[in-house]
Amino acid sequence: MTGTVYLVGAGPGAPDLLTLRAARVLGQADIVFHDALVHEETLALAARAQKVLVGKRCGLYSTAQRFINKRLVDAARSYKVVVRLKGGDPMLFGRAHEELACLLANRIPFEIVPGVTAALAASADLGLSLTRRGIARSVVFATPRAAEDAAPSGWASAVAAADTAVLYMAVRDSEQVMQELLRRGLSPRKPVAIVENASSRERKLWAGTLAELPELAARCGSGPALVVIGEVLAAAREGLLPGLAEPATPQAARRR
Image 1 (tube, helix red, strand yellow):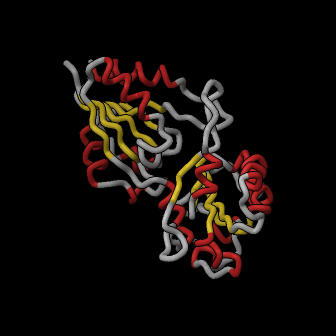
Image 2 (spheres, helix red, strand yellow):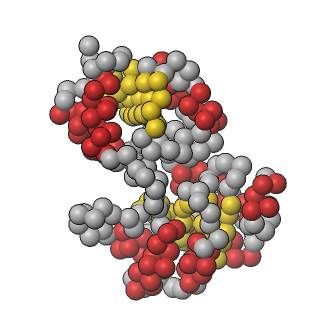
């Protein structure tokens, strides 16, 4: 028997942002290989499935990608419905290409179920459109992170050329990010914001300038965080964004 592997986007965190298709597939799943940050209510939808944690967290123990690939192939030969449940959208910074390549090489059928990526959840938390007529007509999603054996990334050039940029996995490297973008010609007064735990009740929001990015990043806890950069954030300087109406403190975040 050869089952089907479903690469499913779990969304940015809040379980009610899961798509209807994703919920249906989870309900049919025999086994689910899930990321570390998937909400327990989302996992509960896979009521009859075996659940296997294969999460990756920066600075913590992570499951090797080649091991995940092998587990997916082995599972498809034993189960009808195999789900690889990824945070956000599986096709954006989720290493989906490696898993799909392995499935194709082993002739395993697969289907991709998109999810809400964290950048869009962050913009919703800020009450901010990433695009704006006359100000922002281009948006870049990028990350400064790269594998040790990977070729140099062009993330900084892409961010410098974009009207609005959202950086994934950048908070830990905020000093280097700031310095690299300044070298690319961005103004130290360029508006930035950080959103931690986007879409969840524990979300925290901070706004400032590019020169203040390391200081803002130092306020983050251990939750996943995004850096938003662009003139669309200019209103945040005066505290005009709905998401920043209250002081961005842990106490304020808990009241939301």
